[in-house]
Amino acid sequence: MRNLVIILGDQLTLDNPALDHFDPTQDLIVMAEVMHEANHVWSHRQRITLFLSAMRHFAERLRAQDYPLVYFQLDAHPYPDLATVWQTVLQQYQPQAIKVCEPGDWRIWQSLQAVADQHAVPLHVLQDTHFMSSIDQFRRWAAKYSEKNTSLRMEFFYRGMRKKYHILMDGEEPAGGSWNFDHDNRQSLGKLGPQALSQPPVFTPDAITQAVMVLVNERFADHPGALASFTWPVTREQALTLLTHFVQEKLAQFGPYQDAMWQNQPYLWHSLLASAMNLKLLNPREVIAAAEQAYVDGRASLASVEGFIRQVLGWREFVRGVYWLEMPTLKSANYFQHALDLPNWFWTGQTQMQCLSQCIGQTLQTGYAHHIQRLMVIGLFSTLAQLSPQQVSAWFLAVYVDAVEWVELPNVAGMALYANGGRFTSKPYIASGAYIQRMSNYCTGCRYDPKQKTGDRACPFTTLYWGFLIRHEALLAANPRTRLMVKHIATMPEEERLAIAAFAEQRLQQLADL
Image 1 (spheres, rainbow, N blue to C red):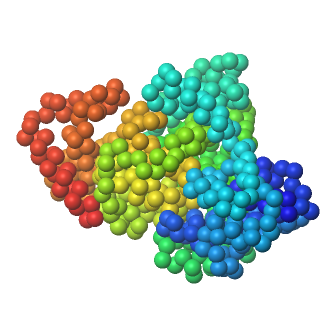
Image 2 (spheres, one colour):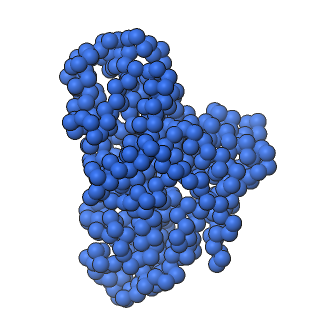
Image 3 (cartoon, rainbow, N blue to C red):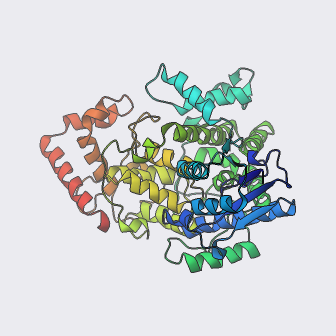
C-alpha cells in the first residue's frame, strides 16, 4: 500500500485535501467510530448521533464513488480509541505513508503523530483548505499584529479577511461605509416577542440515522440529552436545504435580533448551520456567498448580512487560528483561579433561575443554544460563580452538537470565561441580571428579582456580579472598557460593600440549591 488516508469524523467532504491524487489501486481510506470520542467528555446523545450518522452517510458516499474504504463501526469492533484502530490498521496494511487533513483537535493530532512515530511511518498532515485562513497564515498575522499590540483583536483580522476575499466591499472600502453594524444588531424582541417566526426544516431520520439512534440509546443510555427532537442535517444535501431556508426565511431578521432570547424559542432567527460547517458538510465560502447575494438582491439588509458574515468569516476563522496559536496552554488557562465544581443542575436544567433553566433545558433537549445564550447566560454565570474553566469547557464540548475543540475551547475558556486573561478579548464578559431582563423575557415568572443585590429574592446573577466587581475592583478600574462598571463601587458605603460581598460568598456556597 502507498498511502493510508485517515478521514476524521469532522472531515466529511470530498474536498478533503487528503483525497488529492488518490489512487484506488494503491491507497486506502480508514474511518472509525470509537467509544473514547463519545466518552472523553460525557457527550450529549444528539452530539453522538449527529457525528455517527453523518460519518456513516459520508461512508456511503465514498463507497458510491468506488473509494476503497475500511470503516470501523462502533458496534462491530473491539477497539476503544482511535490510536488503537490506527495501530491495528498500520500493522495489517503496512503503508508507506499516512495522509490526513489537519485535525480539529490538538489531542487527536498528538495521538496520530505518536502512532506514526511508533510505527516509523511518515505522517503527511495536509493544510485544511476548508478554512479561509490557514494556521500558518494566522500565525503570521498574529505575529505581525502583536508587534504593536498586547492582545489580538478579531475586528482587525476580520477587516483583513474582508479585503482579501473582497466580501461586502465597495472598491477598497467596506460596503455602507462601516466595517460592522453592531449598533443595529442588538435589539430586544419587545413585549410581544418574536413575530412570524419561520420554523427550520425537519429532516426525518432515515434508516441509517434510526439505526444510530437505537445504538446510542442502548450504548449511551446514561449520557445526557434526549433524541426525540433530533433533526440535524447529516448529509450535504440536507445541509444545503438548511442553508437555503436560512437565507430565504431568516437572514433578514437575523441581524437585529441575533442577541435576543425568548422563553421556549430555542432557534429564533439563527442559522443552525454551525454543526454542518464544522462537520464540513458545508463550505464557509458557499455560506458567505449565499448571504452576500441576499444583500445584493435586496432580500436582506446590509446590517443583517454583515452581522452573519462576521460570525463566519471573522469570528469562526479567528478562533480557529487562536486555538492553534494558544494550544496546549489554553486548555489549562485559569486567569482568575476559579475552581468551584459545576452544580449538578448543569446536567438536568433543574434550577430556580429561569434563564439558566431555559438555556440548559433546551440544550439538553436539542443539543443547541445560540451564541448569546452560551456567552451571556451560561458563560456569564460560570464566570461570576467562579466555576472551574476546565469543567465548564468540558461541559460545553459535551453538550453541543456543533462542538469541536478548535471552536469550543477559545470561545469558552478565552471569551466567555476570560481564563487566558484577555489574550484576544478586551474585557471580561460580565453583567448583572438586568442584561438578561433587557434581552429576553426569561425574568418573567422567575423567583429571583434582577434588581435586588441581596436578600432571598436577589437574582444570583446580580449578587455575584456585584461581588465580582468588589473582588476585582482594581483590575476592572484599570481597563477602559470596564472602568464605568466599578465607578459606583468606589463611592459605595463600606457597610454596603461588606454586606454584598458576604451575601455573594453565601450564594457561592449555595450554588447547588439556586
